[in-house]
Image: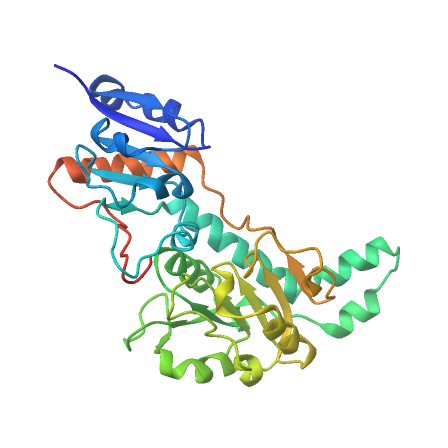
Length: 325
């Protein structure tokens, strides 16, 4: 009896090795690695496909054939949506996003470190060190607050947002969150705000953390002087760069609506050399590394979804092509 086949088309080369460390997978499955580009024949040549999103684009409109689903290796899908015309038809092959507690932990930790960095004036400390200046009096005069005095606003409360809320709440922060529909607060989020209440939410935040996916509904949600209601709030963007423009951020910083910005994502990536964000004294540029997928998490996510499919269930975190996440 021939084994079921898992095909891997990914730059995460250690994924195969991680899968083979699981006895059941090693005994029951044949695992092949292939190079891009993928062709239509793959849907009839493998039972499962693990693929980086850009590699999967050429086959998404094929009929599934033998292929049961595609396990994506990334959390965000904008690398697909920018390359597909979804106005006339939607992909037929089920495809999942990477979802793993460790990846969410990575993202939450960078949000916490960004808040602490802004609150404790790490940017000024670094500049002072570069200039060999003992800026003790200036740093003391700027002051800082303990985390349990801060009100943290989280835009987007999916798996990553919930982990952020959990960790910030555990540190004593007041946590508020933006959701599509009103709901009552709970043990990790003190208050949920609906979209229509966004200005009220922003006006009460000490820090704003964006983790929203890139969709038509989130395009420019923080544009058009949305930051004008803020009172010197820190802005941390680890979601997607579509929520506002560079000009919106710079205007917010220069007007005093925002205190500092930690930016891991941008409307155009890589961030062009001519972008004023590179040299703005109140901006920290992070090159989209807040959360990096690893072979361990990809393998764990795939095995969890494989088990669901084998039990007749749908895999978790299937992409909704109407909502685009």
